[in-house]
Length: 125
Image 1 (tube, rainbow, N blue to C red):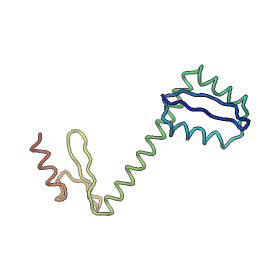
Image 2: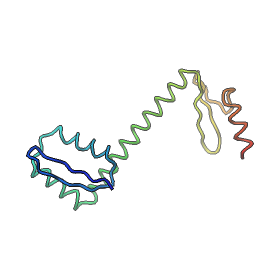
Image 3: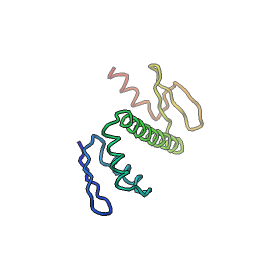
Image 4: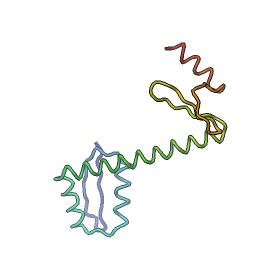
């Protein structure tokens, strides 16, 4: 459980206990700082969060979507960098391995760079 104390401009403290990780809380606070929100509005927001589970679920889904989106972008970037370096990407679907070669070809034939790994993998089965 993360415990956070947020201080307003006039040093009023808001104490929050949440399961959200600290980096997510920081992101939310930074987003809120972009707007001028009165203490009454902040109190009201916290009250809504405490009482309304559907809003909590919406926030969790939104954060999950953001995390997945960021992860997908990072994976795509890593895959592009691998191809630029001449390293094939490996995919697994329906029990089969597929390889995307740097020229864009998709094949099930294990490229030379992965032969040792796949031979060991086959032995360990």
